[in-house]
Amino acid sequence: MPRLVVSTVGTSLLTNQIDVFTDSEEYFTEIQASANHTEEEISNRAKEIILELKDRAEDKIYNAKNSKQIRDASAELNGIYGLYDRKLEQGKSDIHWLIATDTYQGQITAQIVQEFLQKEGINAHIQQPKKLSTYDTDRFSYGIDELLEWWDTIFLAHKNTHDIYFNLAGGFKAMQGYANTIGMLYGAEIIYIFEGNLDYITIPKLPIEIDYSVIKPAQFALMASKSVDIYIKLSELKGVPDSLISKIGDEATLNNWGRLLWNRYKDNFFTQELIEFPRLIYEKSFHKDYERRTVDEKIKFELHSALSEISAIMLKFNGDTSRIDPKFEYRRYEGGQKCEGGLRKNQIDHFYLNKNEGWRVSCVVDEIQDSTHKKVKVLRMRHFGEHDYVNDHP
Image (cartoon, rainbow, N blue to C red):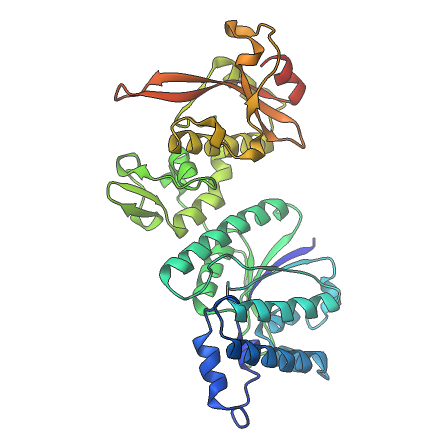
C-alpha cells in the first residue's frame, strides 16, 4: 500500500548554513529576530540573509556527492531518506506533506525540501497553517486549529488507501509535540532520527484506547463548526474534562485537544443513530428516510456534517437561512404542486449534502416557542435522499 508521509519542517536547513568563522554576528541576530515573521513582516535585510542561506542550502544538497551529505544538511530529508532506506525512488507512489510554520523562514525551508523531492520524482506538497508560529500562545493555538481541520480532511481522504507515517525528524519542539499526539491518535507510524544518526527509529502504531464516552456529540459538533464560533453552556457539558474545553464565563468551546479528539472519533457518532441538533426538527418521514438500506455510513457522515453546520448557523444568526454556507446551495423549490402535509412545493426549501453525488434534504422554516417561551426559527427536516427521490417527494 502506498504511504502518506507527513513531515514537520523546521529551519535548521537555513541556520546550518551560517558560517561561524566568516559570517558576521548580524546573520545570527537577523535570523533569530525574524524567526516568527511572515514575508510581509520581515525586514529587507533579514530577507536578503535568508535568501543567501537558501542558495547555500540548495548548493549543498544539489551538489552533494552522496546521500549522507544531503541527510546531514536537512533533518526533514534525513527522516525521509531513512524511511526509504536511502532509496528515494521507492517513494514515487507515495504522497508527502510538509508542515511549515506561517513564517518566511518556514516557507523558504519547506520550498527547498519540496523542490528537492519533486526533482527526485516524489509527490510533495506544502501545508502552511495560517498563524502557526511560536510568536505567542494565541497564534500557535489558532495555527494548530487550522492544522487539525486540514489534517482531518486529508486523513478521511486517504485512511483506506494509504499507510500513514509522521516524520518528526525536523520541526520545532512545540510542533513535534502536537504532531506526535496527532500521529498516535490517528494510528500513524512515527519516525524519529536523533542528531548525529542516520538510522531512524519508529514508534509503531499504538493500540491506544480513548474513552470517548466523555464526548457529547451534538455539543462537540457545534463547537467544532467550521462556519461560525459556537459556545455551549457549561451546564450542557457536564462530565466533559476541562482538558478538552476553553471556558469563558458560563460557556465553553473546544480547545486544541478537544478538537483533535472530536475529529478523530466523530465518525463513531456520525455513522450511527440520527443525532438531534438545536433548531432542527426531524419529521417522521425524515427518520424513515435515514433508516433506508441505501443510506450507507459515508452518506450518514455527510448528512450529520451538514446538519451540524446548519444547526450552528441557525443558532448563531437566529434562524437566518441566508447565512447558510453556499456550498450547501440552500434554496426554495419552484412550482405550485401540492405535497404531503398540505404544503405546496414552492413553500419548501432544500439543500445538497454533496452536489456531485446528488443527495439532498428538503425542509421548511417554522417558528416555535423554546423552553423560555421565546419564539425562535427552526428547520423542519422533511425528506432525505437521492436527488430524484427528494425532488419527487419534497
